[in-house]
Image (tube, rainbow, N blue to C red; front, side):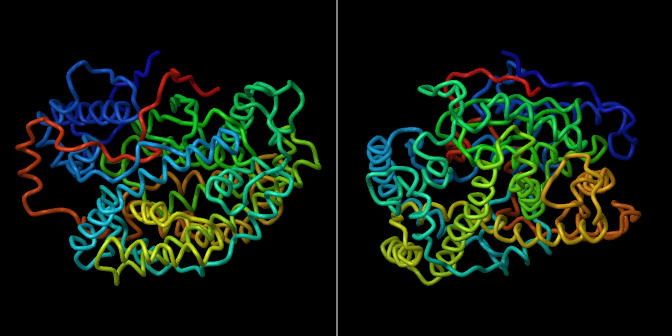
Length: 522
């Protein structure tokens, strides 16, 4: 297995950005360091035999000058670890297996309740004038996006009827609202019947039996569509990791040159959506300008990132899009309906997260926090363990980014439809007419390539509305200060001794993989 990334300096970079001589060499050195830290975080070996912590200590001054001290400290596990159970819910098991796995997962989360509450309390105490969840970002967030994320709201709705409707064709023995079941149903595993509609190649499957493509075929088809739309240049190297019971996710390695794509081993109906979502994130990595300052290449506005990914994910809800994946008309109609319901359900879960965030402001103890979580969970109509709902608060910036991202996505769709109303049938989309226009994809690529102040969610919209406007000088979107930064942070960086002072931030998406070597994207 090789995970090497290119180490040549980017050609044609202006001297003002990458100065000649030793400064340019230092930028490349830091790029190599970040790449190895990201690979290590994914459980893969780096390219340099010298420990990354030692190299970070040696480059402390350069990291501070580049504005990357806290970002690298987070990759090293030197920031406060995020509480997370080591157990995961085995969603690839049968119903009895899921129930047993859930009991272990829930018990471990229950033991972490006091730790989770301390973590949340410390974050709130350190936040100052900004929302406490700004501290989840290692790099400052744009002021306008912070405002939009803080203002997003959604009512908590009863989701039990959706879960019950999904359960009918699934042949479940237990309740659809049991957490080990509704989380399984949320993957769409029951919507096409007990077999899940999974094609041959899945253990126990019969070739030709299912209605969904195998994972390798699905990747090939979706990557091919992304390449035809110019979203994934051939020069961007992508390694694929197959890991059971983990969510789909991407991880930048060296921008704009290399990323990791982690996928679960089982294909379910939502795999189509999730893979399309992650390909959107890969495009955002790949289209970073190589001549941008290093900190700009690694700064992502979460509102823009998730809104953009939701835009591409939305295209997968078109029956025409699904037909191009070889899915028959009847199955495509079932999937399109399920995807709309899945969005409604997921938005309902995140509305509960935001409601609990608000309620926790009045809590003083972990017991009160659990009571608040119980009340919110009850409003969803689901058997949702309060300790697991409370645990999700460690990712509330992510949930806010999704909820606000839906509204941002719809604004982008309206702008694109207004500008590119008539399609020409090039086959990149299928539900939104703009997706059939090469000019629309060119404009989207241009907007995605913006970095710095113009690389925000507001800057993206500005690029759509005023495509001729220069993306570096004509838009000023101020960034919020880092709420977790202390006056002596730069000094602390220069004094770093290379030892880990805590575990790396954990969670399902950050777990070290077992086994499987990475493969390259087609």
